[in-house]
Image (cartoon, rainbow, N blue to C red; front, side, top):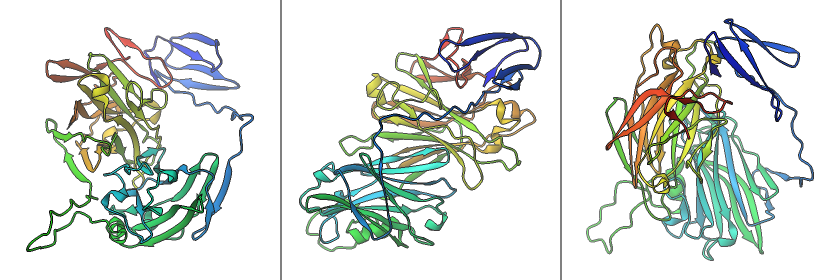
Length: 479
């Protein structure tokens, strides 16, 4: 989408190398054409969405697909792979994927046999947890496995799923599915029917007679993650038992809870310490959430934008789908995908993943400004009515910036709302809510400037539009 005055220039690229045309126009509405159809364009252009013929790759090896019903097992063609569980987003859901590395007794050797969001990798490398990815209203959970690295004492890996939110059991988790990916092999695991169950054993991975195997289970329990931990012999963080003379200092129990901090006033700040060591979380996940305002119109598409202030004072910007960034390479921030709708039962959620080592990788303090933007093709909508909130997750800590933006007569002409700011300095994160908005009718983006030890936010950054090169505004430009 683009902003333009009545006398502007529209640069139209026809999606073929070297073919571009420039058309002047001076009226309030101009016409431009793709093929046989004409489209009316006002001061802010409507971004064309073309459907191109699907590309059919040649000489590609076919995938080896197989479907497993509960109780069935099959051979996996290689020892390394990934378990992927997906479902639609929904209100009051807190779905988590967990792996238990168990012995022939059905128990873990010790608490390190539990791989999940607070302990994302087993020391052997046999199982590793990845943070969920939210894209287009769907949430994907994954655990990678390498059965060739199973310790001799471990006989199998049990992959489990829990729903610990207030949304009820798995009957309230829409479009639940699971699959195992191992090279070209794809195993689809057809789920059973669930009602109030809040814990599920999805499948088991093991080695039998030198062959890697998978068994579909889909057995449900009513006790969530706590019940699964008890069944597999993991001591969870609870009230300690009374002991008169302990023989030895008790082992620290596993924490399976996420600490949620809510910040709703500008100026309030919360600090989070980055963990160290091989088991430390590698990802800082930041998401923007919003709901349909119930006006009956298709105008609830927001875009999460992340402005990045580098240690040298330059700024970068992340936005899906064309400025998604990278997790492993500069700028060490990755947008997981564009979401175009929301409802009261399935909120719109866009997510970015920040490399927890970003400050070390960039060589100094990094600040990030998180905002949501409403494009003109959403129609007239008050972003405040969509109740946008920002959430940051790191390990078991969750911080929400829940400033309540106020609507007003001109609120439908305010396009950008700043949800919060994150500052990362070495091994510390500081997060604070904002509440700042752009001026009425302004396409300016949030801009950060370092003033000594302080970071200043102004709403005068260059305009940014999907599918267009980054613009310069005076001496301000994104890199």
